[in-house]
Length: 171
Image (cartoon, rainbow, N blue to C red; front, side, top):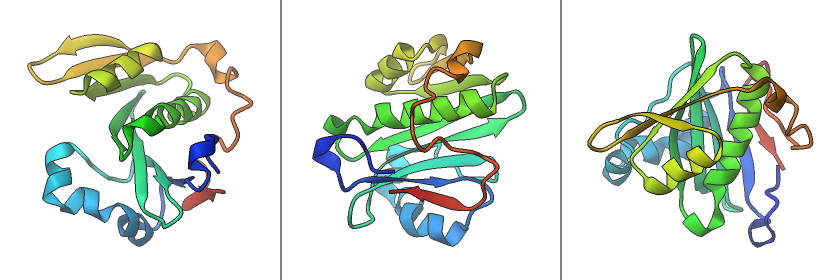
């Protein structure tokens, strides 16, 4: 899917939903798991068989933004957000895409998130999340899917369908 902003016409969204080719995924995302600078930035970054990844690539197939969610029993937990250029507002785009997909595919699931970034907390709160617990470094938020939201974003193109296998690219 081409992203809608005029300034970023060459970016595209790639989805990795289980089961997907791990080699293709790690070819793009390996640095975020292996390099010390990213390990410090994302100490809780995980990837397992229940993770659904949303990755934005530039025209040279470099990762410019990503996020993911992990499906659990009666809950979905949002993972880390990465955005190379904060002015691009890809976090907002990724969150919207994930919430649309989650509300359609897991309508009864509670949605959880955690962050130590004030801007991410504010973004989550603007999307209906509420802080239910705080520690010294992190805020923990949750949101329930409201039934009417399943249809609110029906005009968003390229919604994810977790029944599709492998990775998909929207151009």
